[in-house]
Image 1 (cartoon, rainbow, N blue to C red):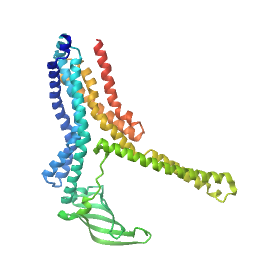
Image 2 (cartoon, rainbow, N blue to C red):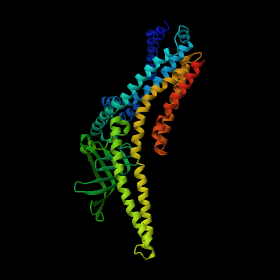
Image 3 (cartoon, one colour):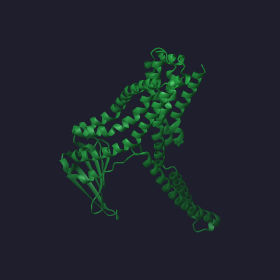
Image 4 (cartoon, rainbow, N blue to C red):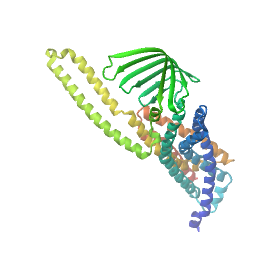
Length: 422
């Protein structure tokens, strides 16, 4: 009879249904918070430039996986705390215990929900998010063709294939202190400066700028010592739609799948190993040359250049160190840990949430919500700090990015053991 009560599917389903219902409410709460923080700001930016509402809606749709991936783990934490807290404050947990059940009857449903949310969160983060960003960038390119002025903002640098546009202050359609760096079809490098420029609406023809007080400096690619310059009170400059469509959209590791990130890490490590080996050969040759000079003494013809050789040797050493401390590789390594640690956080939260929920008194649901929000904020802060430490202080990403999960898991297990002993 005890085993039948322990395996009661009715109680298991009841607790699990309560948790999922509360999860949906909490998910909507966190979804709204992150939605306002990220998506509506984007919508406001493009709506102010008269982008059609349908395209804005699609941009928001393609950005939703980012919001969902962040909302699900925290919603799982708060939902578990609120559900267990309510069951405890309403004495339903006490009734289950007196009916012959153990604390496992509430732990297993919470564990089930944590596993499901972790899997769904990982799928969203690893599959839907990269797919959404691909469609997002394609749509953004199409928007730029119809509204190219979107890309010109105050104090910004924009690249359109072989053209760089650096802007100062922007007031309406007037841009102050404009600098353009480009390359002509004949291979000439040009630098164009203007005190101000007016952005004209050229529709789908491209980006049209009327420059005031322009200065143009041009030089050949191979013979830059030969250059020409010119000035003009008025100068018209435009960027074609073809250049706008081919502008760079850098995909960050956050927007890549875990397989792509791992592939990039592997390729980058091979490249670093090759560069490091070449640099070591150069370093050995430089060190050998300096050693010969020092061995030959003042009679050597290169004796007066020994300081230069030593300085070059030091630069080679610094270059070797910079190759080993490749920041691009580090960013990808940190991100691959993040891609797994955040979804698995929903699983680790189960142990902490169940333990704290069993301690609830009074209005357990309200207390669970407050505790859940506080823990979510602390978790996010620890994750952010861990990311900064990994990128700036060379802290091991394995420790920095998994520390919040480890703390949640260990704290929950300790509280659970203490609760079971009472």
